[in-house]
Amino acid sequence: MLSSRLKTLVQNGFLERRPYQQRPVRHEYVLTERGRSLRPILVAMVAWRNAQLAPEMRSMVLVDQQTGREV
Image 1 (spheres, rainbow, N blue to C red):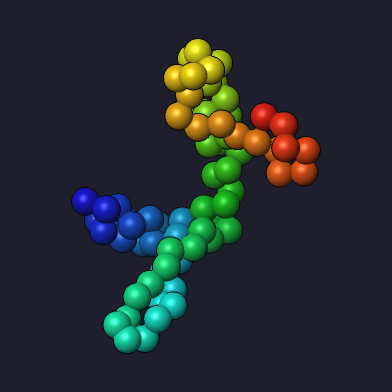
Image 2: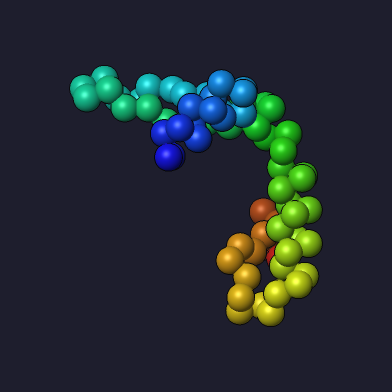
């Protein structure tokens, strides 16, 4: 399932598959510019869902990298 999803994300230009080891050959998946462009949408979706949950029920908390404050 994971392999199939990663392959689809690569085919659609959201991820790039890069080799990082030769023996055995291993790859890492890196966001492309297209993948990074989804960030504002994902942040908005997480913020919307977090607003509906009690603080202890949130599975993801977004933090501003510069200030360390919750977004």
